Length: 380
Length: 131
Image 1: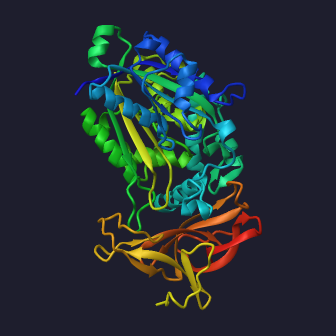
Image 2 (image 1 turned 135 degrees about the horizontal axis):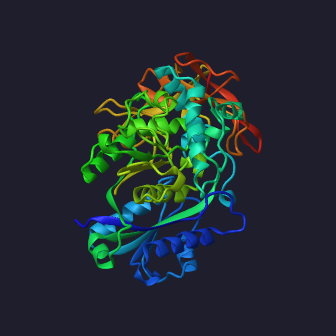
Image 3 (image 1 turned 90 degrees about the horizontal axis):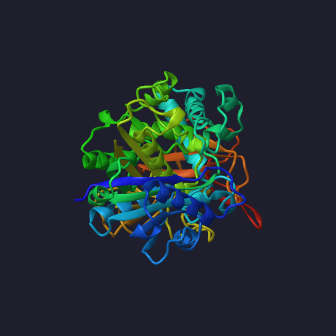
């Protein structure tokens, strides 16, 4: 099978964009990615576009605005993993030899599409009982605290770390660090989670141009980064009384990605993970097999996951700091990995970044821990 | 065991029955692997068996975890307490809790009918709660 590379990246600032349509944002990300890749609009063979709340044919609207039409455009909805699923689709098409240069875009205009707390689909029986996304993560946090002897202020340090990183990212929704005191004085959203521990409602778009190894040789250049693995899994229906602090979905997806890339969790030197809530980061990193169950929060307290720590996590600011425009999130994580692996991350550059993992997952439905999960591994 | 023909089935949500004031959630059991599944369904996700038996869950269980939802979607009146209840039938169900202070992990709870947190045009909706 063909090796796949990310040749170009593009991303809008994440945040509130009342003056821009989702098509404007998507178009901007695509233009930046094309220009970064050094290829033209007519070079793109096909495109996959991830979004959740944007309605019919968002992908076409964004690509038309970017001057691309006529090619296969596939709209991808997979909850918060929509953008990273677009990357998975694009990688499959390249590996199959169907195309040699393709585009994956993620876009979301949350501020016009959405209000209040995010919740599972209204048809879901748990949503009808009042379950929200903050609610499910708060309940998982309560179990984590009880099982591993962890306090709310210790979990809150994850938000402090990520907002500190976000303040160094010019494309972040939040530009200001917060203190632990500020986080702990924040409004409770779902006990024990407070405002700073919940990802904000953000608008934004991110895009990547992906190519086969053969195409890369033909184009030349040295800025491409290898997509060594792209794995997608869905949540398994739970039977019986499972431990809600353990992410079976994350682990099964990661296991597939490690096998594809031929690397083990011990070789990963930095990670972007789906920190939709503070506690989620702990569940993800432990689920990826990077830290034993129940230890993550204590390690954050020791600074091990800081930019200069032994395993920097969410150096971009993560969803908590950079923002979380659902469809764009998974693509933005890969954009960050490429910046780090190129050595282009500026103030937040991780020293000796060689192998990075991007973990994105989303959705909740009755009887499953999560609906969709992707793990992408990039290697310098 | 509750007799399904004699129990009162509410039209709004037929996923529970009430007998002698006790609320029993409707579920399924796989005759092949024994898995208990809530809500009731057609096919066992564990082994694919498609001839599941209807069962009713006990009217009490224990609290696996809890939270207080202070922000929600517009159909719900906040704040409200949510719990996951583990039933003796080896199945876990999310329910609102009838009270303002959440119960601790491991607490025994009864399943009862109570108003809220969901609101419709007639006000708070009566649905099964843990108490």
